[in-house]
Image 1 (cartoon, rainbow, N blue to C red):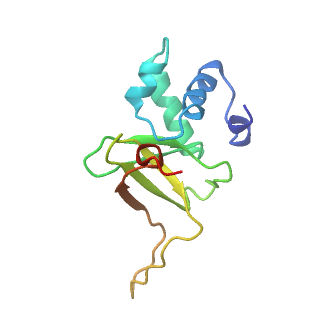
Image 2 (image 1 turned 180 degrees about the vertical axis):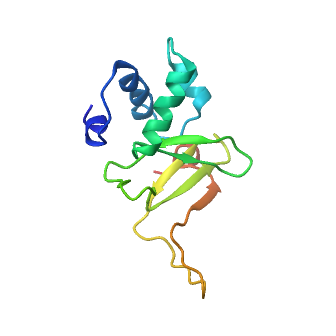
Length: 136
């Protein structure tokens, strides 16, 4: 469980179990999904674990318009020491399967807003994912 150790989180059986759920899914998942996957759990412990994972940069939150909040595993190189998640990807929601993916991109568009300082930007896209489109 190098991910937990690298983020200075104590490795516990419950944290390992929750992390394994994220590792098994290539798309973002809801807290309800996590609850369904866990055999037995204490809801407070789960929410504390999720909060710790977010604050340490293990996972990040995604809120697509009209959808519930989902959580996705951060890239292994995600730096979170500054207090901000800085990802260079697009959040993509498939209109067919409704799954939300973090899609890596080499470069995000540059936005110039005179007089404004952009500290973060999030790009959300909707369409048909590679699994539903059949394009490989």
